[in-house]
Length: 200
Image (tube, rainbow, N blue to C red; front, side):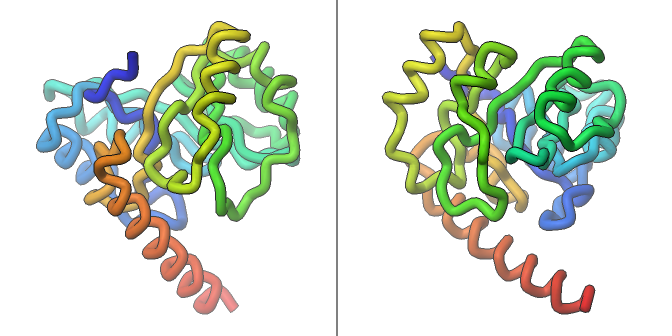
């Protein structure tokens, strides 16, 4: 049973393709009635630490994590205490485990991603703890059956994540709010185009 009060995949302004501050993430999550969130920025835990510090004394739990872009595609760690330095898939998994943190498979069958997954899910699942059963931006995800099989075969814990890059996406944890993920996806594309233009 997926807990609809927990959003396990949110990006803050510490991800280059998000402009949502850690403070805004916490405030928005509270307004949406969420009890637990995971800040899962690209390749850094800084946003997670900022959000957790801001959330002290508030009725919400903030988990510090990072979505790491490895040489084989994205994998995430949750409950991290230090930055992940490696970008080799197996070394990243080892670093996550060495911190006592958990390995999280994001958007296992998600589509239209800038970073392509080049590893076989069944090869990584034995080392993993969590898997994203629902991702708010995987709007062409027709492989729930395969995800259920992974959950069963490898005793993984299923979670839901909005994959929010904008505040309005936070809490998008079911197909009812699919339009939020679609809108957020295209806004991120525009932001990325602008970012690369000014970098040149």
